[in-house]
Image 1 (cartoon, helix red, strand yellow):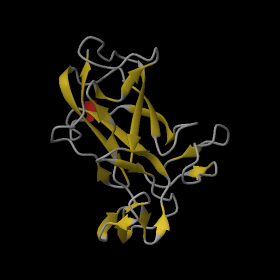
Image 2 (cartoon, rainbow, N blue to C red):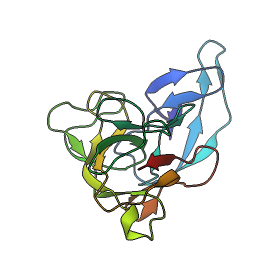
Image 3 (tube, rainbow, N blue to C red):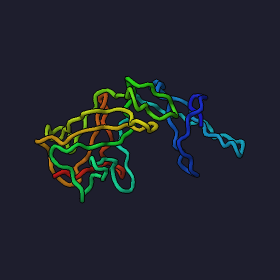
Image 4 (cartoon, rainbow, N blue to C red):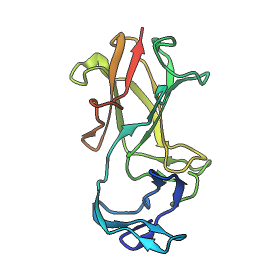
Length: 188
């Protein structure tokens, strides 16, 4: 797989999806993407891909959003978030980092962490002040490739409810809150 004629690090390939990492220094813009089959000696036609500086989104799988309690259990209906609790969120699209050196296809550094700009996290409607969570740290997850980690806390005054929409905001760009993979949380 190449973007603008530059090979991309492949993280996983399957018959349909291909997981690749964009270079961390890639500027926002529109670039040609081509997928090549080495075995078949064939290449796809070029497709234009738009790259944005920020495109925040929380990872979501069949078990729900990648939001975890300190003990590693997933925040869900049976394990709701609690006041003053620290949570870990795994996300993508939080943009450039400062600090540790980041190289495409290489795990994020364990020392001299790669830190993002200021990130806001909301459990519920972002226009309601009690929806905002306290973000303690945000950056590339040490030891992982292309995965961002947000450490946040549920403040004393917060919204409570089942299936509260989760919004990440960085650089004035908010994560999606609608669609089949829109993350929701349960908070007491």
